[in-house]
Length: 305
Image (tube, rainbow, N blue to C red; front, side, top):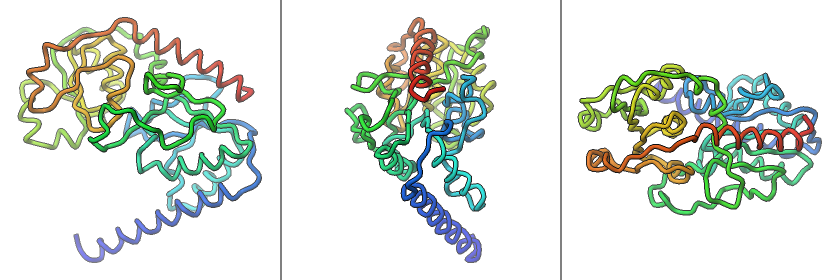
């Protein structure tokens, strides 16, 4: 990298940091917080199908067209940031889904919401969960970096907590009603970064694989046509369970440990020894849909939709 490119990259980083701080300070210092309508705030990123499809605005008519990207607050375009500010100040908020809690990249958002929770702003968390990268916390009870009791309605995808369990709303997608023929015994779904790791991939050279940044349809079809799914992707794990598949995960975050139906947790080095521990779970799709429909009714009543 040339000195000029390095300088431009650093300058862009500082500019984004300034933009983020400025727009959030404008929001929390605004005394005029309204609930005129509602907006679903999540990572609206079409290049990450898990983040993109884990939001309720995709599945309920009451929320159609009412979405906002969490990361618009650092956009270099002033009009995009101004719209982010105005939309949040004017509307009630549905946050989620996704691993937004206990993740540094979303700390500023959570701090903003904690402050807004002290106003008349109506805020609903829908299918969010913890997502710490600290391996010391794997499998441990995680204290959220928000205070759930501050909010009007909170549903979390992490099971066994005092908060209401609401699994990822992507279960509502009609693709999960599709029947696919099984064409392979074992399928690998890895993050693109993992697939670039030659040492890791050499251990799985006998199996077909797909990257988690593939299209939603391609990724779901690959999962559904596999009997066993090995993955380091939360949503690949979840979608495999919706199809009643046997699942093994290679954790890269705390998020894998608190789903209601536990996959087999393994490592790249020892996964073969754990294949005989795999099991599938019945009627996960039906249960997850029932829970989300019930939560939707609560949320829409609370938000007067």
